[in-house]
Amino acid sequence: MSLSPFRLSFLAAYVLVGAAVGVLVIHPLNLVVIWWELSRFQEVRPDLFDFLSARLWLLVLPRHLDVTVGYTLLGAVIGLAFGVFSRNYMRTSQAYRSLREEQTAMIPELMERGETERVEFKSSLRWDVREEHVNRGLEKVIAKTIAGFFNADGGHLLIGVDDDGRPLGLDHDLATLKSPDLDAFERTVNDIVSKNLGGDLCPYIHTVFARVEEKDVAMIIIRPAPRAVYLEDGKASVFYVRSGNSTRQLDVREALSYARARWT
Image 1: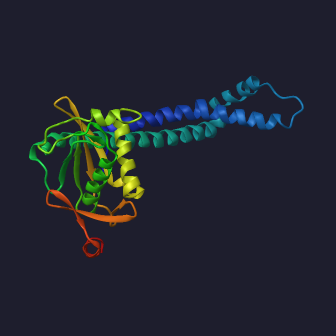
Image 2 (image 1 turned 180 degrees about the vertical axis):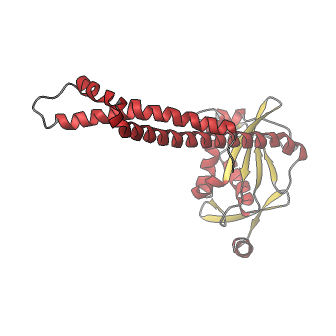
Image 3 (image 1 turned 135 degrees about the horizontal axis):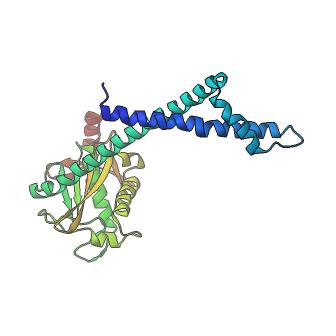
């Protein structure tokens, strides 16, 4: 794959800077180490400034050209490696930002289309809208829905949206958290999955947020799980699967049959 002129100039700049660092930084630092090693075995420690000044100028002499070239090449290689790393990091960051923007743009569209086999709306994460207080039992409802998507083909769970697709916001949920912000909301979602379904499943969910009609809406993007997912409910392990636009519980025989067909 050919590199564009911009990428070549970008990497060339890192190589040049690295070469300069090799001569002007790495070489003096190496001399400091040599000075320290020598001074340990001498009764009178030589002056560091005199030691450096007596050796640094040797780099300009023809007979020490190989040393100069060596430090230049060392710095250039380090600069090139750092340039490649920086370029890849920027490209990855840009791709990640673009993906988040695309995912965020999906939220209003999904709200307009309504609930489907791969989309469900929930009014809140832990705030009881009717009773107007915190209801930790709602976290089980969230875990149940996520489990259903895990065991099916994945999907999107939108929180802060009523059954008709109207935005309700996350203000009440956020107010129940120690740190009332969206990052804490995302951590709480991961905690719910980890506690009720299994910590190994957290990498299979991703939460994004959007402002819809001046209200925050969360969307949990759920990928199909690599194993059968059971919701721990007291002493029982319950199996849920997405069916139509709802989440259905399977009995033991149905769950075993479904899991055998799904994961083999």
